[in-house]
Amino acid sequence: MTTPDTATLLEDAADRIADISRADLQIMLRRAALRLRNAGTVSMEDDVEDALRDLAGELGKTRNDLIRFIVREWMEKNIYLPVHNVNEDSDVDGTA
Image (cartoon, rainbow, N blue to C red):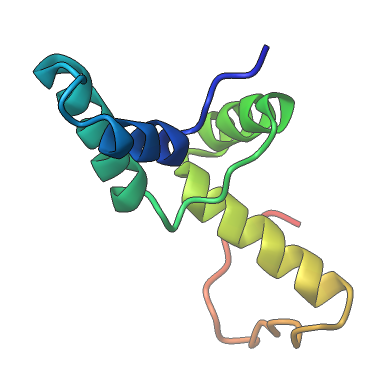
């Protein structure tokens, strides 16, 4: 059994506004606000979310920063973006 998404719940509530409790409406509106606030976020499957969370923790990055890093690396390796060249005078952390 699948649970209805937030949009479906809001549409259903709008159709029967007189019958829905204030508490249920408040919960749905808070969920909708949260989704709107995080609309830039990419949704992933649970196993991918777990791997992203673990890797982000290991690297000390946020989830969104890690996704940006992964996409940029993939695009550079597949020649969709130019590779960043390091100048001889630029600072490096000493690792290869």
